[in-house]
Image (cartoon, rainbow, N blue to C red; front, side, top):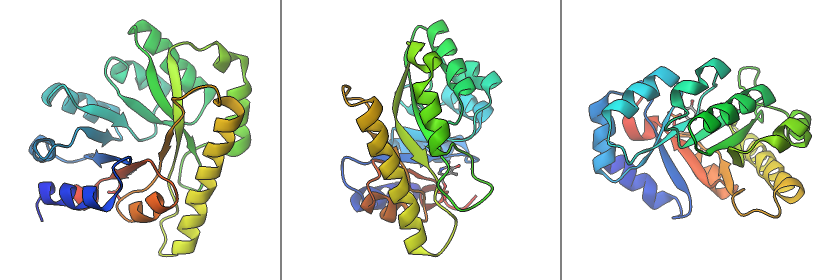
Length: 220
Ligand SMILES: *Cc1c(COP(=O)(O)O)cnc(C)c1O
């Protein structure tokens, strides 16, 4: 199936309120353009340089999501245009995003990345680390970032119950944080979970944003 057909099929599988991010990492510009011409406007990349290059060469009405691990010293390259940063995993990184957002005269939307898998390799915070960040005076003082919600990756496993359990954990984190820190706002509304192998389960468990790569563009 073509990229356009894949996008249309996936769009029909997920509810309208779920944002579909086309994860285009390692894929060439013509592939991204095919997705764009099929109406796709949210794209995800995991490397700063690659996203920068694609941003320069693609139409300007695209929403660029940085979904991968981000080093503080690279925030400045994407701060002028990034739509959402999914992988906030430390106060230090968040401070840098706020600083660069100020420099660019904009507010940057971010998600807190949680470690929910039973694997060693996945990035993200645990519950205590996130609470410490949210309670810190430094976070309270930030003016140019908006925490929109949470993000996580489930274990790479065939065990559906395990995956559901991990997504459910992330949804509970979302609920608790919303109740305790963002109950008087309306922008804390995003649960970014679900990839090619598990986006259907993720949506069933409450995802509002799925990040799909290989099911759209083919294997990498
Ligand atoms: C690569 C990647 C995806 C997409 O993975 P697929 O299995 O190709 O859909 C989603 N989220 C993150 C954080 C990624 O790095």
